[in-house]
Image 1 (tube, helix red, strand yellow):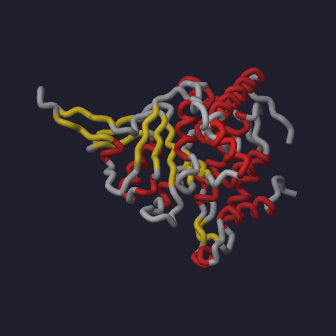
Image 2 (spheres, one colour):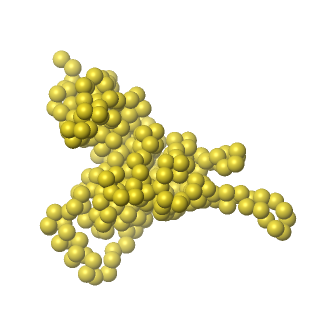
Length: 322
């Protein structure tokens, strides 16, 4: 693929890559794990999406989110999901002022730039769905009145595996609103030793690297990243492969194709490029698409994983048509 002229200057691209590197370094000062995890959170932020982090308790999901939010220089609120959490506990409610007899909105924690939904699948579907409008429309409706949410707005949710007691599976409509899903496993011996060593002393505090204006500027740059037709064709071929796969009840939707393309543009910008490569699509296919696929009942009974099917698709679907 040949590079295409872009309105983005080389200096602007270099600055974007520099900021991305600074965010990742600050997060890794606290979170001991693969570099691609904070990078994917950045991709989600700049692509205008949300991120879902899945893993067993104790693998630093919440620590990662807090460290990432600290680098953004934005308002941050946390929602601890529990079985008795109500939708109004998320969005807020109107309260009566005894002094003048008027009602005013007491904003819920969703009115922040970065919202951590901790253990989101411990609340029932009705409460989880309170985030749907916020995640998709960047607004909430409270007692018939619609209120816009801050810009930028990002939901970073954590969940435990659905096999754990007290968890509920997320509705398909909601899980589709997450641009990426990141699965955090146990660290290897070297990483766990490094984590223990760091926490023997004073815990590091990430510094703020970006601000709301920087995020809005970078998001605008993502919209200027060039995409060749052959990359579009590659995304379409991947989507078609999953839709025709015998082990999948539901393949990649058009919304998922758009999400993959937007994420690939964000990854290109963070890499200092003004154009998308097929490698961007390949690198993001599993975190962007795997959680959106629905297996057939037979495939589920056999223990088939969507990640494995997508890996096979990436092997079989060529980046370029012959």
